[in-house]
Length: 164
Image 1 (spheres, rainbow, N blue to C red):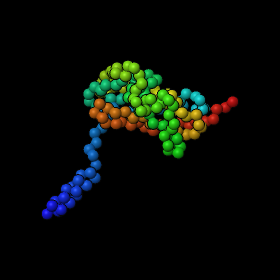
Image 2: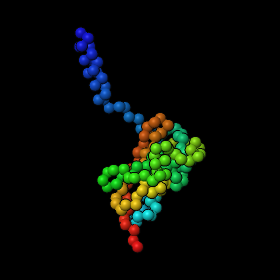
Image 3: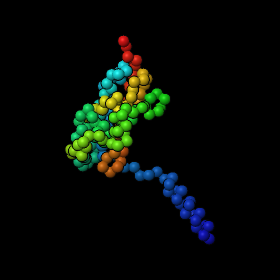
Image 4: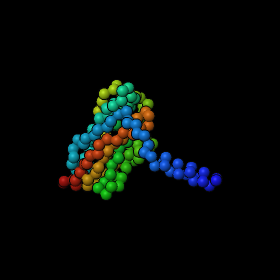
């Protein structure tokens, strides 16, 4: 009898864990665009980031979102090479990736009303070593106050050898 009861519990647990988790949309959306789709090795790779409040209420956004340092606004950047592997971090990139915003004023926020957007930028090669020519895919993501992750569109940037 006990064995039958345990097997029923196991079957129930398996069924519940195979059910898709309810999805709640993030309170914001992210859209990115590269300033240039092709750059030479060593050139700045600047990506514009637009964060839009898609919720029905105000959301908190770090004030650095409107600068060229949006990575300090709780925006996480991911860059992968043509082989699909994560690109190598710079020292600054390691700090941002593993420890979060490195701004001493990372607690300064502003409220973004429903439907409003903020535009900032990220200098990708401040965080990633893109000194090797090749094609790189880039996206950004950010968690909202409820812990729901929003992911941007994915873009491609080609790094070409420097010309003498």
